[in-house]
Image 1 (cartoon, rainbow, N blue to C red):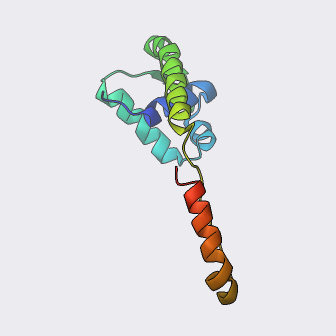
Image 2 (cartoon, rainbow, N blue to C red; image 1 turned 30 degrees about the vertical axis):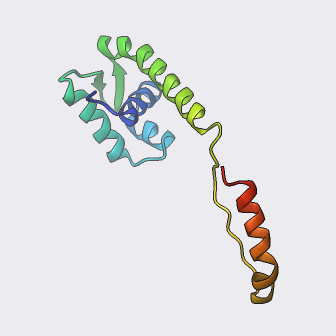
Amino acid sequence: MRYTLRQIEVFLATARYANISRAAESLAMSQSAASGALNELESRYDAPLFDRVGKRLQLNALGEALRPQAEALMAQAAELDAFLQQDSVIGKLRLGATLTIGNYLAVSMLAEFMQRYQG
């Protein structure tokens, strides 16, 4: 496999917005990072996916053919991610206590919590 899911994500966002800056913004990444990901994807396969018309990027025939497959791939990746996370613990627990409480109550409470949720 010579592409990354991030490159496919950038490809789809660029296809949606026809503009790399808006695509980057929608993915919370810099314009240069999005542009680099798209350029790398096209370069690896020596296959342009867009026609550059001024500041607009329009899907060419190859890009149009790739789009539904890329959408299906991202949907499968999202399903896999959801499956892998279904029983996992997500997040962090941060506690604070005074010295008195920490020495006498928190230890037993944390021990009980850890025993119950050791998962």
